[in-house]
Length: 247
Ligand SMILES: NC(=O)c1ccc[n+]([C@@H]2O[C@H](COP(=O)([O-])OP(=O)(O)OC[C@H]3O[C@@H](n4cnc5c(N)ncnc54)[C@H](OP(=O)(O)O)[C@@H]3O)[C@@H](O)[C@H]2O)c1
Image 1 (cartoon, helix red, strand yellow):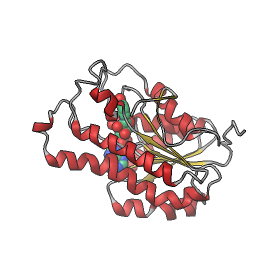
Image 2 (spheres, rainbow, N blue to C red):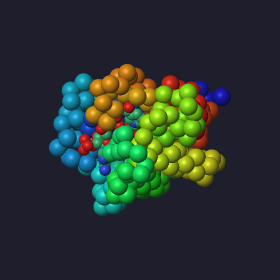
Image 3 (cartoon, rainbow, N blue to C red):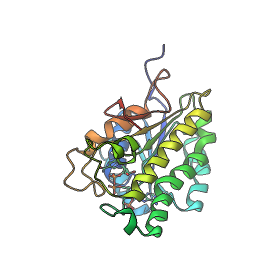
Image 4 (tube, protein in one colour):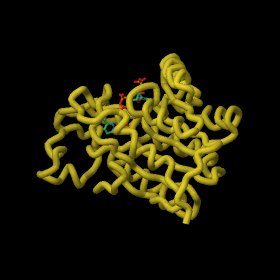
């Protein structure tokens, strides 16, 4: 039974990593000895974030990556091949929440489309673009940063703290992202690649607000655990605090 994940010579890409959870996930992966490429739609923010983590002695490289821009995504595989020759870990972290507190009847369809562009179509496009590289890895890992707000079980449970939350665009995009997890995990079941969703919990970031109880350090733990799962670890699951979470 293989109960360890070798971090030596591993390369990870984290999308939307210039701040918040993506930044902290990148830090924790790099602290394990993994070479981490931080995606940022604004290249100057990416360079600034990379410089900060490099000053901590970590192996970090920035790449311009807007997950809603096809040209930016199409350039990725060649960039990765040219500079790193491989990719072992993809963390689909880039995300937006535009409709916090908006009832569905008041939701502008353009907000719904914009949210899906980033949170779902973006993750799909990046995954598809780098999958050929991940297939070449001896231990490919895909982690989709979902949310408890995408859990239909929570949304339907009157006892859940998230029962009354209104933000259908964000919620539906994360439910769809969970479907992406399940479908890719099924397709890749006979390969070493593992595909899982994580909810970091409610985390203090620009998206999560200062009211959130968790720190980015705490929120990054489960995504990093999933990104470094051993060969006998799970695939096709949804996790919070390293435990299965209801869909
Ligand atoms: N915070 C929470 O409580 C919480 C809970 C559950 C799930 N999540 C999920 O965790 C992930 C990270 O969120 P966060 O809380 O760290 O939020 P955040 O601090 O607002 O960071 C979001 C990141 O995504 C990037 N981004 C947005 N649109 C992008 C695009 N089109 N292309 C590339 N990057 C893009 C942002 O870049 P810019 O700096 O350029 O805007 C930023 O780097 C999201 O998927 C979010 O849904 C968060």
